[in-house]
Image 1 (tube, rainbow, N blue to C red):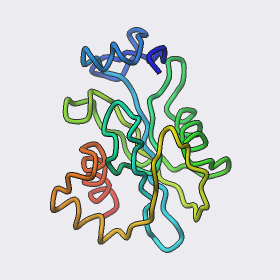
Image 2 (cartoon, one colour):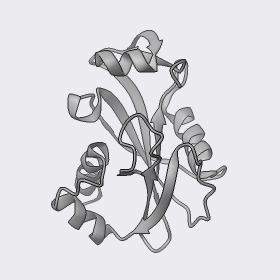
Image 3 (cartoon, rainbow, N blue to C red):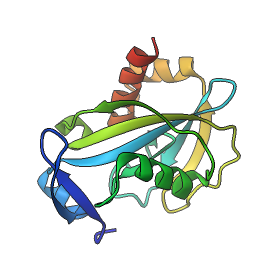
Length: 167
């Protein structure tokens, strides 16, 4: 994981270099990530509980799938890779929803958010995910409104923007 190379980007999300993931996180450099919201046909959202082995946010609930955009990748390719690695989904239409600007609150990541419809079952990556479950939109909205500490701050930020976009 420490050898993972990511693109360093400027305030306009233009690549200005490449650096190891652990250095990017330790020094707060801007970089790129993707998050995928997987809904089923009943309108429920699948959330993953991050593995306790993760160096950030272990044991917290997060978007369905997420990850860094590797150096040399674009957002779309990264999203396809992440959803396959984490959930085992090999065929799904990913719809780009919105992009968040890099801020300290979300780890200095420009985040491209996608949505797809998939009913499962999923093949959860054990080194990434401890468990997963479906949640209603109403339940998620209540948890976000209550500032549920079992949800990652990034997921809360994404969900708040999703509610604006979906309205």
